[in-house]
Length: 166
Image 1 (spheres, rainbow, N blue to C red):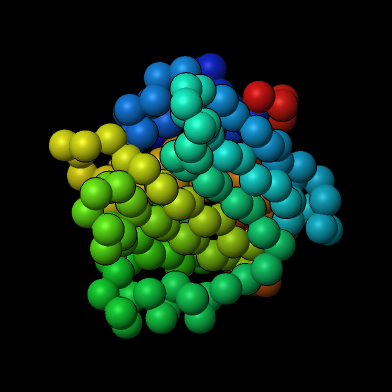
Image 2 (image 1 turned 90 degrees about the vertical axis):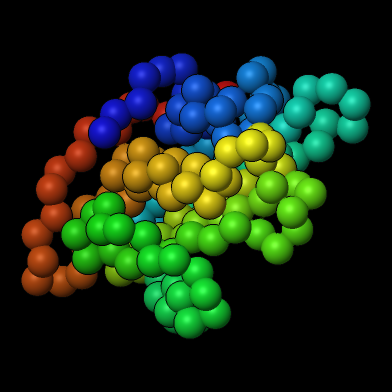
């Protein structure tokens, strides 16, 4: 599955952000550096409304720490497990309790790398939990590098677009 450019923060498909949030021309801040932290990468991307108080609608983080316990706890508390996106990765997603903001979250962990997506204000009328799961399927293969693969399990080589600030 590949998403066409343009991207915000170098890796996040603008079209997906627009569909998920209802914000078609977001103000985006952040970037990802996949060469730091021994190749695990680090970075973040936030999308904001351009009007009014520039409210944050989406936050994506890549961290060089494995939080498998968080995924297991989320599932224990009722989150849905993500389907296998990357070999050796484990993830969960759920819809937020606040029905007014249409929030949803997803987290994916492989080895010592974690990606989290927080949809803080989702487009109304959409399945916001399915949206964060779909976005994870689009971005995780680009952001989770081979350095995070558990030892002893091969990982396919993925091509990544060159990061640009957006």
